[in-house]
Length: 76
Image (cartoon, rainbow, N blue to C red; front, side, top):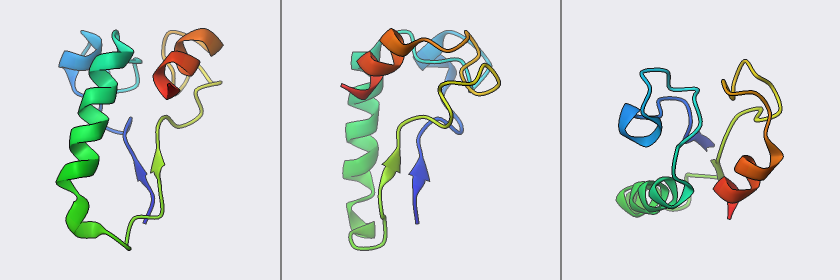
């Protein structure tokens, strides 16, 4: 089961009520993602991977418009 972390991005991460607006601070998102993965350790062997963002090259999913620099920072 793949898990997409952007599906319900909390408003604290982007200052918006829109879950498809990218995070303001990539370090905060990384901390959240790390805690999320640790929380789901009980799913070991069931999770195939974590999708960091769905279609970051499309404004429909990355509301501020495609931004390779911001997306790369998020991946790091």
